[in-house]
Length: 259
Image 1 (tube, helix red, strand yellow):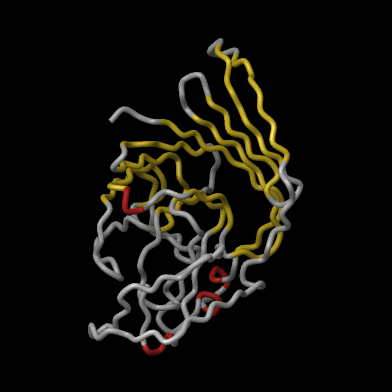
Image 2 (cartoon, one colour; image 1 turned 135 degrees about the vertical axis):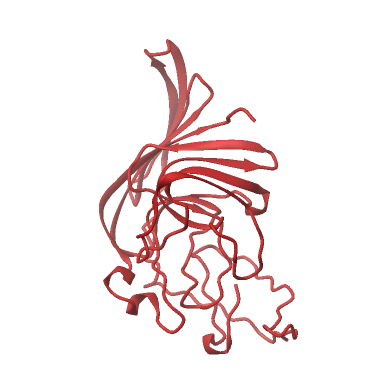
């Protein structure tokens, strides 16, 4: 992430537990090194409302699939706060199914589920959904349903290669991630889910929306994008945080396709 003279000395990061901060080779746009004298970290409780955490109840077992005649193993975690139920099922064909649901009420910049996967180990992503370009909550128009395949590229702080590799992408059906360890694919069983891939390096504070922790996310709400001099909240009704209300449920199927 970069910032200009108008942005001040403040950087916004996704909500996460921080145990250490590393600043590597900070430079100005002109290439002149920046001397860092001190770092202050603050927490905005009203920006990311906390969800009460409760001890989860974990159970496991076997079920019989009448369609295949095979047994399937499952493990399930239930929580009385926020995330209600998470169930992983190892199916007889080797695929791994995730079923989840959570309750959420209030204003949120984004919400959904997220996973860790080092972005620098991805080589390309092929997916079926709304594209081929990334979207923001207040910039959803202009895409169409289709298959997109984009190689990971590194163009510096502001990518000039289109369609983009990192970002939020609308209405995911399926995605295949090609990585240095081999391909893996995911099929989404719920409508209206956004796929998040990596975290783009954007230039200005107002045009650098928040991203969840992790690297690959499946979200029901995503942030809005501001402009050079206007924050997302001042850009209009669609620039406001998303209003969550009720139970959100979904399912994902993970497979290892042939190379």
